[in-house]
Image 1 (cartoon, rainbow, N blue to C red):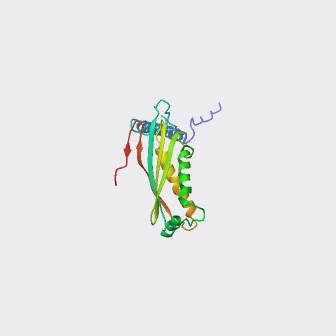
Image 2: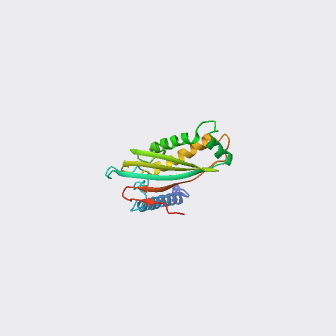
Image 3: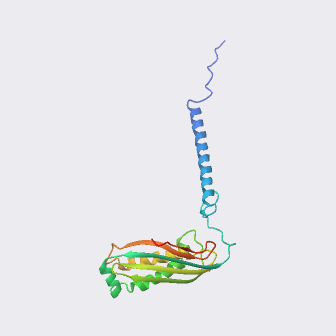
Length: 203
């Protein structure tokens, strides 16, 4: 009687190890996803972030059920430069034209188009935008005040106005001073909405 062929091994070498590793990876991924979801839930809780859904994906917050109200946002910033650059701005000797007049228009335009720059910002009905400058010996201080009557605040619009104005000053003066520094763009005050008034404390 012919001898029977040896039985084939039921498992390939290392197959069990690979399966275990795969299962471990899936388990780790599940734990990571659960931890991420838990963290998102914490951030989305009272007083937390609202721009993420339960899965952690970015979203534009629904504000349709919020009442419309008067909103105000005030932001500031500055651009530091060489004394000769500040003097040239003051004397109107910049080749591109009236620096502060153009920067003011840029700031107003920046406030109006904030929702196009910042992905999760709502388009708002602005009722007024003011951009003011204080020209010093080595800097231009910028203040933007934005008003709206809507369901969301205008803090971002005020900040965008300051940023746009500062960048425009840089663009118009860079031919004579590429070392200018834009800094301290920050919210100074906001009014309106559920949270009411917020004002930056004096440093």
